[in-house]
Length: 189
Image (cartoon, rainbow, N blue to C red; front, side, top):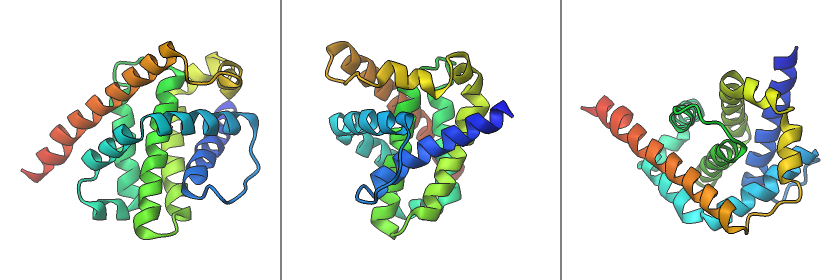
């Protein structure tokens, strides 16, 4: 039962951010965690827009690769596995992976139009990954309420937070480079 509730909350949170990025003009009712993620996610994305675009280009060098939502979701999940392969979990890493997923969804929407169904597949797949692999960590901290407590009033401008964010993004970029090198190119040889 506890897993069902966490899965439901996580899916709603991820989907809210993805839909916010894909269709920012469409109003949607938001809970506190969704509002906080949208605010922080947008700050992270705006400060590191080029890094996220570069990650996207490395993951999907051929834009047509973005047309299959299941394949894209699988790739996003494998990248997330690499990001967390050192078993270090924190809210910043979780948020950065969600921002990357939303960047992928936004690119899919830009290239192929409506992304509602694709967003659903991406959000659900990433939610499964988060809950199955980091659900215990999230529950130990009191659920997404801890994320809200920590970031409700906090903004990203502090130097320490910027360095942490940059380190997380460097870790994600390294994971993507490794993934591309050993999974994509290896399958084509």
